[in-house]
Length: 142
Image 1 (cartoon, one colour):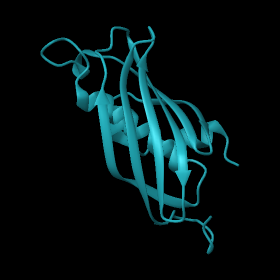
Image 2: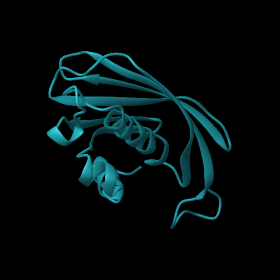
Image 3: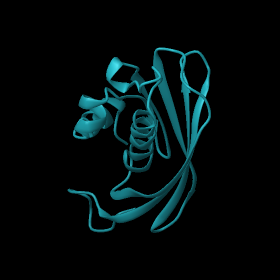
Image 4: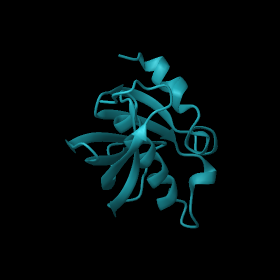
């Protein structure tokens, strides 16, 4: 099973989330991930709150890590339902993705986004679709 630093190295290739948005992986295990993103001025909308796109980027990144970090398959986001609950008031967003159901070709994840002060910022359900084996995976992906 990959170590956390190996997972971080692999997902450094998700340059929009990691470089542009500043997302980082705090925890990762099969079917679960916690990712964080410091709230920077570039994330704010005209009302000085993190814009929905910034919140979504972090949530989608957490899903990607949870669904792909320990798998020989590539799973992509197929459909998302997002409910924005409140504006973040802290300095960091935290997204926790958890697998609710994993099948052969589809999966369902819940992603909760909070801030470092405990405010519930957003709740997402993510349907994922498995598109194939990851590069370098064995002949019989799990």
